[in-house]
Length: 546
Image (cartoon, rainbow, N blue to C red; front, side, top):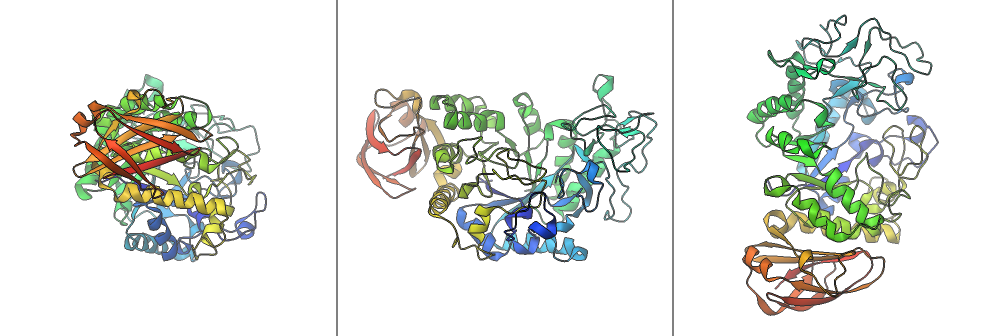
């Protein structure tokens, strides 16, 4: 498919127009966004921003303090990754709790009518400690329903057990009983996990005998495999277009090879995006059928380092080169998501505008998809003390909260940006122009890339500057960015090798119109030609050559 532009949206606060922000507040105090509040105006605004897909985060029903034991629930709103029923949606997100699934289905329909694809989370590695499916289809066997808890491990079981041991923690569990204890979700094989473990979750058993040298017992197919495959098919049947797979590398790749093939047999274009952090496993998971994988430990970490740690911009080259042609366009680029700190936070670089050159690189460099997290385009700082989540540079996923930046854009559901300040308006305009270029321009969608940074000489600071070409027959783009905190006079050389590799036709007295802000530059677009350009601090240009 062509290059996806993904907008990650957390409904709990994206569509929350309540401006009360009480520390550790309840849903009644602080409010909660709902499916119905993501209206046509909201979706049109996301389309206008340049997105092709929306990743609705936190849809499947998960543990909350209202419905589950607070001692094993993180925050009043709970973690969206502690699933309590794979066949249900979060009641908090519905106006009418008894019709919550219908309200979600209406959102899917509304999203498709706006021209956007729909992604949700699939959490295959772990579930909430109090998992019990009430909404499973008739005839479906629940997870753990026929387990033998007296066995520490068996491929017949859906969970791992610690026979003879009771689940305990260094706090009052408020009447919660678990005997025998189940293994905790982060592969924590102890009955006494710490506050730093994923103590609110239990690990699912795919037939890997961890305490037996990680022996794989996959024949016959473990029951967890068939149950999880059927869960994906259930949601595919609801009309969604794909899933973002949480902690994919903690689940055996053999399961995904089997399950993805089964899903794509019925839903050919269904997308699988994997959260993976181990480059040594990338090829295996792509071979198993994943369409895209996170490029967190590569491109994300490096662009963050260039932006706020003084890493040389020339090192960006090594980040894309490490993947090779087969892997490169299957990596997902981003600068924010719910796990990472906000760009504008005091933990990153303190201002959304300072990441503009990094975002240009992430968006324009390759055919691979790019993702932004709602609020990123507004300079959301994530520096609130919400409750369970403290001041950590992230927007809480555990508390009921409203984000000032999103509320300024939403303006009580009008999504007209009337309450945005000047800085928010300027940053939003930048993202809108950049992402729309990436969505609509054929050279970005399907063209080749040639990194010309290596060929630069005097007048080009490889510590702070980066440049590359994108080309498809009939269209050429020259992208130049400045990571320096001061205005820079730059001399960009066009190497002969680029013309050969891209099969470019040189043109004297050419013009380059900046697609971002409209300024036109004159240049000799010929082998070994030179462009002299002045770029403000933290800015870039995308020149369409004519």
